[in-house]
Every structure is written in C-alpha cells, then in structure tokens.
Image (cartoon, rainbow, N blue to C red; front, side):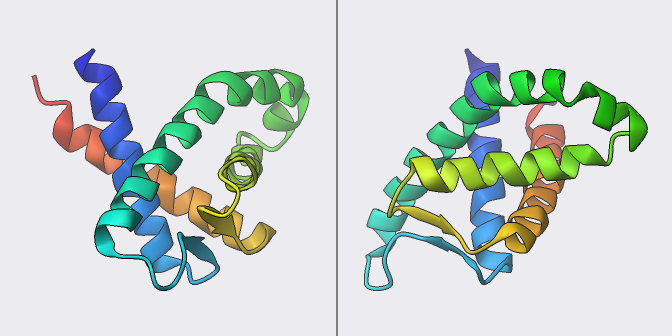
Length: 123
C-alpha cells in the first residue's frame, strides 16, 4: 500500500515539475486557485498512473522490435505518447501542447519521478 502511495506522490511531483518547466504543458485554467490546481494535479497524477499501469506495458510489448533496434531510446517516444494520452483523457484539466513538449515533459517526469522514488524509498 505504501509503495502505491509513494508512486502516486512521485507522479504528482514529477507532473508538477513538468508543468512548471515546460511552457506548453498546462494544468487547469489560468484563473484557478492554488487549491483547485492541487486537486487537478492529483487527479491528473491518478490518470497518468493508470495509463502507465494499463496502457504502457501493452505499447512496450508491441514496440519491442523498435525498442531493441534503438537500444531503448524509443522509450522516450512511448513516454511522450503516454503523456499525450493523459492529456487527452484529462480533457480540460491537463493540456500538452505538442509532441516536442510531450517528449521534453516525459523526460522531465522520468528523471523527477526516479529522484523522488529514490528519496522516498529509503528502508
């Protein structure tokens, strides 16, 4: 149970970092309060976690030849597609401007979630 909660917190922090660092990734509306944006961030983190849990393994399985051919660099494209799918599923709450922004956001999310998991997963 705590592992799921830690991954959820890591996703939320990583998504917040991506929204903060990439200008084409937006969260909520411009006039929303901080509390409203925090709730929106938690909802988007939940959607992102479910997308990564359900859809990402299937996409990785079907793209296995490309992953082998590119020595794993195609994972950046898969992460960008998962971020774009999250933006599509979250509708007006979360918007990813384009594929380039999604690649950069996916890279930021991967690095930040790795770092947060490293800090939180101390036994």
